Image 1 (cartoon, rainbow, N blue to C red):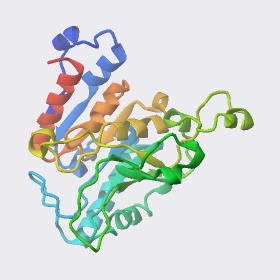
Image 2: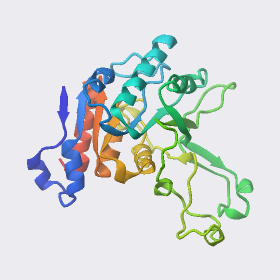
Image 3: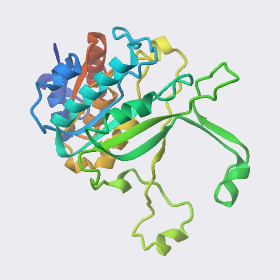
Image 4: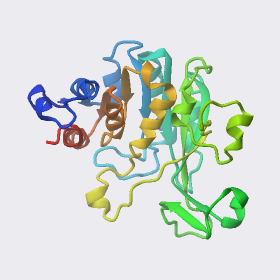
Length: 298
């Protein structure tokens, strides 16, 4: 089943109607209620520029349809097949951003999945996605302006004296060559010490952000109402991935595990069409509704 996002009559009335690039991206975005391997087999080879996804981690997450607790060997074989299909549909200068997390009692999952991709892709970067961080004023030194210890982001409590809270996940950046040029300053950050601008002969106050990204969630007070999907990343994450690859080089983004559509939202916001797959029709319909509400006002 295909979910068509938007229609031309609605687009005439949309609040962003003057932005033809976004309008075109929305009209060309397609969300499919399908197993991603079956779906990707129907796509043309090398027809996708960037792939951004967060598959089930096989840690027992309660999805509406998918059972997230299959045997580890079966899970890893399945993920390798997913990776093989991604390589087939991704162009030679494409990027594949794979978000993986774990639970305290099973920390190996992200790296075991990454190792399945080793025979398929080159691992060009490993990005640490920080969800929550605590900063001591004593650790900041002369560079900071904080007057007290602070904690920012959201931490999922763990009732255990054995394991620390999980404040981060991984974003594995795979490419076919391992040497793809990136637009690092598109997700750059300003220099704390402004004298470095002149010292490093920079034209503007912007430097490489590095491989640690702090991207917090919005505050969620009711998981049932505000978080209809149990394991989604915020739209800023795929937005930063697309920008890092280079927006001007991206015509099509793919998310094989679409969920509630945050990759699609990020893509369309940047004027780029998105293709998404999800086996649960509820999430497909929810994604369609969100895209129409955000970009058409309906």
